[in-house]
Structure formats: C-alpha cells, structure tokens
Amino acid sequence: MTLHESTPSPADHQIRSYFTPSRSNIRFRLPGPSSIMNALFTIAQRLGTWFKEDSGKASSTLITLPAELLTEILKLLAWKDVLQVRGVCRFLAEATRTRYIWTHLVNEHVLANPHPPRLERPIETYSSQELEHLLLLWKSADRGLEASTLQPSRERTFVGVKTGYGTRTGNGPYGASDKLIHLIKGGRWLLVVEQTGAVSCYDLDAETISGVRLIPDQMEFGNNSRVLMTLDYATHSPVLEFAIALSLQDGAPWEESLTSIRYRRTVQIWRVDVALDDTRHAVGLTATFLASFPHRPEILGVMSLSLLGPMIAFTSITDEETYAFVVDWTQANGNSLEYPWRVVQRTMPQGYIHLLPGSRLLVASSNSFSLCDYSITPETTSLPDSTRYSFPVVWQVKGHTCMKGSGCLLTKNTARIVLGNNSSLITVSFNNTPVSNEMPDIVPLPPGPTPLFYAQTFLGHKYIIAMDMSGYMTIMSYTSPGFASPGNPTEVFRKYTLFNIPTACEPHLDEDSGRIVYVIEQRERGVLDYTEFAVLDFAMIFKQ
Image (cartoon, rainbow, N blue to C red; front, side, top):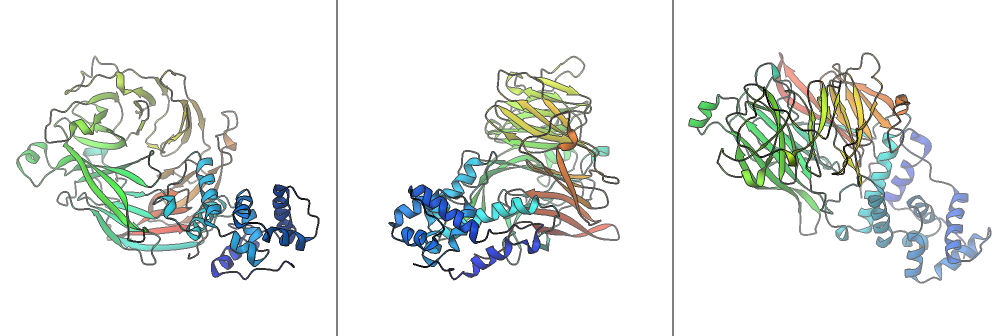
C-alpha cells in the first residue's frame, strides 16, 4: 500500500490553517512529513517492530491491525501526533477520529491541570468531534494567550442590561462601583446582575448574543441600591455546577425597610445547573432558589462577599467598625434576625475576603492581611466590644493594603493567591493544613509601566489583566507554573499592552477558553445610557 494524503473535512482544513505560521503570534506549525514519519515510528515502537523509511510498509502493517488494537496504540500518542497521523492516509484519518482516543486526551488534560476545566455535561454525552473541538479550544487558548504578540482571533460587542457601573453606591464615602458580572468557567456563559437583583445570562458562543433572565427582579430599582454577587463552584461535581450568593440592599433607612415591603435587605443563595435539551446538549442555565436570610440591623453596608459550601462571609460597615462576618446560611435560612454569626476580624470598608477549605478565611484590613480560623471564633448574635476584643489569627502580614484578590489555587496542602490594590500586586503562597501556622511566602509583582494604574484588575491562576484609568489593558502571564522566588520578582511574568478603550472597565478572563470580556460604558451627558460588552477570543474559532 502506498501512503497518500487523506481528503480533509472543512473542520480539518480550519485546524490546519490555524496551526500555521501565517499568524505566528497565536498559531503554531503542524509538522511536515518527517514528523509524521516520527509519529508512525512511535507507533511502530509501540508494536515492537522496526520500520525504516519504508512508509508503505508501515501503513500496510497498521491497516491490518484490528481496530481495537490500533485505537489503543493511537491513544498512546500526544494530541499533536494524532493530528499528524491523520494526514497520512484515509484509513488512519478515520482511526484518529475514534471517540475513545479523544475521551482519553480530554481526561488526560483535565487530570494534569491543577485547576482543571469543567465540562458542561457528562463526558459520555460528547461526540468524538465535540471532544476534539474542546481539547483544541483549550490548547489553542494557551497558545493565543502566551503568544509573543497578543492578538484576538475574534472581537465582538453586544448591548446588554444596564449594570450600573460608574454610579456611586453604598454608604457615604465608601461607595464604589460593584462587581456585577461573572464570566463562568468554560467561557460560554456571562452572568450580569442589575440593581434590582435580577440576573441575566448571555450565551457567548451564540451567533447573536442576547440575554435570558436567570433570576427575576428581587426589589425595586433605586439609585442607592447596592447588589453584590459571588459564586461558588461545586468542586465535587464532574460537570459545571455552581451556587450564587446575592447581597441585596435597597439603600433605604433600616427603620423604613422594616415597615415597607418595597425595601429589602437580604442575602439569597441560588443553585445553578446547565440546562440540556432532548439531545443532551447544553442550551442554557437554570437557577433554583435555596435559601435567604435578612441582613441584621447592625449591617449598614455590605462591601464584599465570599461563598464556600454552607458558609458565606462578608465585610460590613457597622456603627463603629468594619468587620468580616461568617454565617452558616443553612442555619440562618428564614426570616429571623436572631441567627448566629461569627465576627472573625476587623477589616476595611473596601477590603477583600476569601473563604478557604478547613474553616479558613483570608481577610484584608487597611494595612495588613490575615489568615483566620473561624472555627475557633465563637458564634454570637451581637457585635464585639471594639475597645476590648482581640481577634485570633493563624498568621498576619502587615504593611500591605489589599482591596483586590484572585481566586485561590489549591493543591493538597498549599494555597496560592494574588492580592493587591490600585498600585501594586503581590503573590501569596502558604500552607493551608490545619496544623500549620507557617508565615506565607510573598512575592511583589513589578509595577506596571507608566502610566498604568491598576484601577480595574482581573486576577487569575495563570494570568493577570490590569486596566488603567484610561482604558489601557495589559495582560500578564506567569512564566512558569509557580511564582518566581522573592529574590527574582522581575521574572514572575511578561506584560503586553492590548489596546486603549477609554470607557472600558471590569475585565474578566476565562483561562481555559482564552476568552476576555469587559464592560464599555456608553454615557449621554455623564449619565449611563446603556452598557455594552466586548468579547475577545484568543483561542482557535471554528464551527463543529
């Protein structure tokens, strides 16, 4: 048998055209015939047979193998080798499309990732073509974001619901724009919450992007309303599943809110699942109400939220201090104002908190950040005496003001997080085992180039996006899976400025799909007229 090129499908043609040097900034070359022979030679070695440069002999030997054995051999190849073998002949091209091969490659990618991507539905419901598309999306996202010259493969904008960005919310001098959007893991779904507490969902994979109400209005619109939203992904679930926590405050005086049904100050918890059609394809998201409890009279303004399992943490201004609270929402569920809480630490109005496994809470205060074990803090129904009470901590680091923070990258015993403020960022790595009180390792990240000012920041596990007051967006990628040592902080990341969009704010990145979303405020005489969303794709784009 003589080797010959297979007839490529349209999808194959797009794959090959993407992985070529014509756009080397986000693409790479599919190796030529010599590399294909290397892949065949690898197969031959697996067979325990020596093949020289006689490609016809290699091919004729392979096509005489039982399909099951050939599949097992192809499964041992890397994904790029599988694509190389596909170009050898029609018989091997069909063999490389076996679902078992791509199931194995997807599982291999997920297991090797310390922060693995989530599938929208059980893997057994994916076809071979869908699994191949998914893996190529992940791989090409890495290539696109790590390229020497950043350039999206696609850019789009769409008009969505008014987010209320740029309005002054909250109480007194502590008002600030709320973070009202979340790009869900996988990059397909964008959630946007309004000042009425309604949450809309946008399918960013659709040809025409439009919003669908996921959660209805929870209260009347008000210029002084404050809505916060945070998410908690179900780490035990093999498919996409998460919970939403909403903090709703209408801005009315507490006494008035007690006497009128128009006003609400509550916390709500919702579970969100992927909706499947009759063919078991994802067509949307569904939200199920789980619980709610009212804010107590002492809570004058909730400034930040964190959700983890049955626990919710928030920072709030009171009459005397700003504290970090932890509440078991399964116990607080209902209308009673006498539910127990744990007053864990003093903090600042625009601070940062993050719940961690093992009853730990990371709390940022005005000039320090602390790791607290809230399990040793007694439950109470009152506030502590601020002049006499001291809070226990696992450790505390002084000299840093941290108003922003990333999600936490967890391994078996360690935690890693990025913290920062408007002018500096640091990486913090620490032992998160219950018996450890070791101080964390801290690496300051180099400041941005003038005039970069970290007004808006997205902090991920592999990348940081910083946007200055003029809309200059810079993406910073780490040069290795770990952070640089404290002695070499300049080796931590490389930086690239993308573009200048003066009205842009609130960037979000899904690292698995290589998709960035940010908000563009459209104003008329200084008043927010409507909200536009921009979507940038750095991964390969092709139709299945």
